[in-house]
Length: 156
Image 1: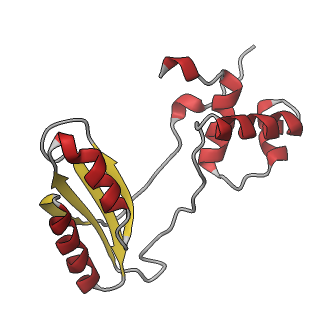
Image 2 (image 1 turned 135 degrees about the vertical axis):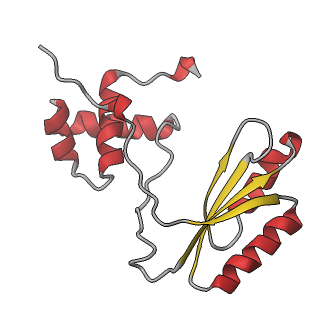
Image 3 (image 1 turned 180 degrees about the vertical axis):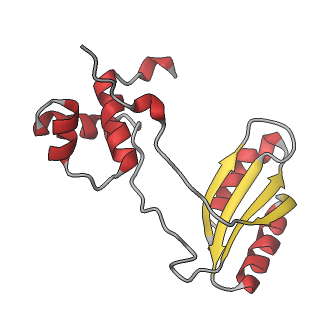
């Protein structure tokens, strides 16, 4: 993990991309005080190294007319965790899957659907895969923000 460290400039670029992945490279370059080409090269390098794995839009499902946004809290044997989490990720309606290291309640599945029947169908599919659904929650709001440890501190 430590052998693939990202330097101060790379972290600052990541911070800007987490804030707005559509931010123009010229704005990022101005903010971190380097050339546009340096930012482009660093982004390419971060992508090639697997530090940046993709870009995604943040969607307000309620505003988009998707009324059912759910969190399934599941338990899976640790020996099957990665395999079942990947299968859960492949299911229609699933927007994200979080896996925890050990214990019960170790796989969280987030899903969105326009009909509550689709949520029930997903619950049955997850159960059939072998994920034991411990709890099911209707998500009211889901906010994200960039990791503050990537901010560039402009010092003297």
